[in-house]
Length: 108
Image (tube, rainbow, N blue to C red; front, top):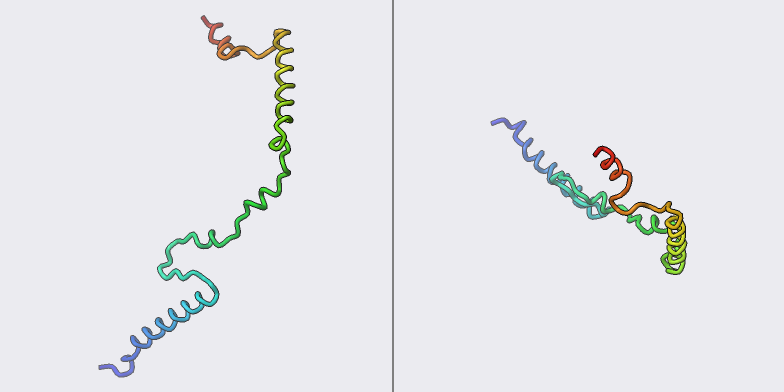
């Protein structure tokens, strides 16, 4: 038996146990999540503050949502302009009779 190297295994085991105990205590004290297996964890992302409210505050308040008459007025202007164009024969073509249909019919 080797007397000099006999306690090396026990010393290593004690050092590992002390190290693990210190790691657990540090995690408890500072509020860290203990991850002894080293697997990937979403904890780092979940720890961050949410930024949705700040992003929402960046954009100004939309008054068209509050007052439906604003949208109705814009729609009315659009429809009246479309009506004028149709009377002059400049309105949009009916569905399925646009440029693509003209090209298809041209080849026949």
